[in-house]
Picture 1 (cartoon, rainbow, N blue to C red):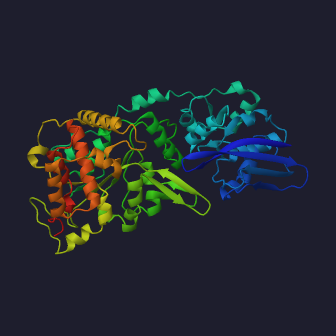
Picture 2: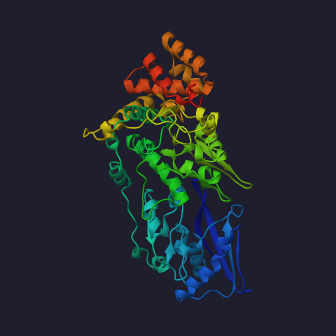
Length: 513
């Protein structure tokens, strides 16, 4: 007797429905799984046998063949345990199998039948609704995540007995309901950090406000203890709120990577990722034999913070150059090519030299001649060119630290950022794939960043004196466009150009001389 159950395989951030055909027939005694399974799937035989026996059912001693179609897609992981088990006991006539074709079923089994959580429940649910399935049977820990997809019945189960009982009596389980929109709105209101905690540093706060308003990449350079990390961690609190579409997109990536907390539903706040400088190339951009998203994709629609930038391996930083420009990363393997989104704000921090006190207003640098330039050269020029703003962070004086004056809270800064983003949304509504000034293409730049004679002359002099590259020229224009939006100007003014030029610290001759 042949019984069909349905599972799902995740490729990139999308899912593909897998048909699991189980045939039990009285010729031979072996167990076969075909259809390009990996070792984790092949090992499921022992887990399935133990589970079936623990339930009081019999494991078929006849030839059993499990076919996983389409057969040219590699099936990976232990999440197929549950649909295969149900297919076997249904094909051997021990439970009714009529309802199995209406549901996507996924879950890893323990030896006693307990169901363990899986990765990628959200993209699986989206694909299940798209293909017209009635519902999904998933581990309880993943039910809220999948239940965000409307028009799909999602049932969370913790033991295979619940699934078998459901096959006999569908009313025994109640579908999980999640008000995704209300939870999303509620979760957006709370932040653990706030710019009101930061004493002084008005110039850096201004730079981060501009960066947030235009989606620009930022490098903060300054001595240890000046507050670079503290400021970076608060950047998410002034970024515009996630839209529901962005939240779903971000949640899908974290779901595929298995980074969602248990019983989580929707990621409502922009992600902030801060990998350690010992990270590998594949962990940063994504990879593996079965491609998984890396840190740059987990930071999609949020912030990627690289602290102690020169301490990262050169090869790690260089593989970021293309994703920073293209806002997506392509992972190619022999049999598959996967695209992961990677539209993030790059925020980096570094000391000006190994001892940390080059250009310090009070302490002397103890580095030998040439060491400063050697230290700065750990970060390549092409990568620095792709960072729109270079911001100097100076130590906060004692008077500011000891002040009882309350700094401007994140909410006030966020309102200005949101207003500037609304101007950009209106500006780019006819241009697909462009949402903020940092994404302005070269063809649009002439139209949107037009300079009058005085402003153009100022930029020309800066280009000649600082020997700026063409990419730095583009970055200055984009930043000045954002400053004009924050100030409410339709045309870029000379003051806007001057302020944008000030955010190219590492292009100045005094650095590393």
